[in-house]
Length: 193
Image (cartoon, rainbow, N blue to C red):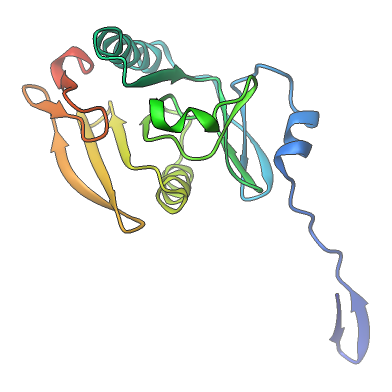
């Protein structure tokens, strides 16, 4: 693109947005330290122990439930989820129903999971979390849980007509009832100390 500044024509270089193919070539395999956000590779700092304990407990409880009720799969990070050409993220925990297994490949998930769980860690900025939420929302994730350990809260969103609606803001003593993993309940005290 060329623009005119003070009578001079100046060529502005185009910024190339990266794709999942670029991302896969440029980042180490099986690394949970990177994401592709709006066509740019971003480094994700390693989470702390408490973050990992929360993710593990949520995944464990989901997996236990799914063994008795085989309605889908639970997957934990690091797992590339390709939401669109320029956005590949690694949600902390995700659920894919049996009817949507076609989005699973050997190396990644190609499309929006039914449920995404993000646990905010010290390295996450508010802007990054907001951008991720917008991608999940626009891509058709049906249910989204945002765990905020520093506030002792879990926000449960449900997607209605392409927009996340906050259904519940839960704290210790409350119980989360999943929408897409029908019959699954989670005591918030089990995940937040």
